[in-house]
Length: 292
Image (tube, rainbow, N blue to C red; front, side, top):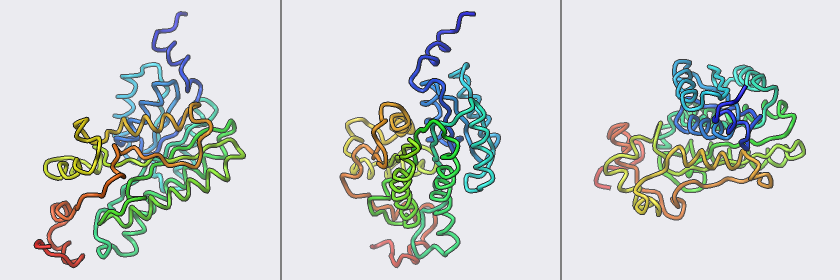
């Protein structure tokens, strides 16, 4: 039987025969990563909490790649039992696991430091750091052939950003964790790296990529004006693809900024965003007023 052209291209691609596991698979970055890995022949299992969103994402991916293997698993990336079950399902797609991309993050971290209590701070850390740890911890034992893990950091890990103290703590911890995990897992030929996006349109950042707020960001992103845009999920996915593939076989323990040069400059003042999203009472918490 003659294979279709798409089937042949996928069989000959750089990731042919490999399997990828992506948490946050229904999100904009997770979905873009899935599309990029599928394009080069990988089978992909997407994990997220919302089963309907997962099915919509799977349908969209299969429309683009009819011959691809796309599995889904509805579960919580912060649940040890759910992560282990999802990883087992990913491994079962082709009898192996080669690529792990934990993209779950967010968790309501945009608020003043003094607006957090222990529970809210821990929630942000858990959504970001614990979900990454669980994926790495339980995937490693299933990666018999070695492979690549690509974690998701953020600009806040290396640049001070007001009202993101919890997220900054979590993302900074992820980068430290990546280096430690890369050291320990190298003996199993498992590479561990991170991608550090700047402002990227989609998901929780939509409010930051509109109107006057966007203009302030454009002033701080060197490539924004020349290219007429901020970051896209596809930009992040391209970096993930590089770190997941054979081209980066000598790279581990690194975090790559994908930010249009955003880290070269300061971060814009987001006080107005705080007021728009949480009301003027938030300014009282941080000891400011509108004149300041």
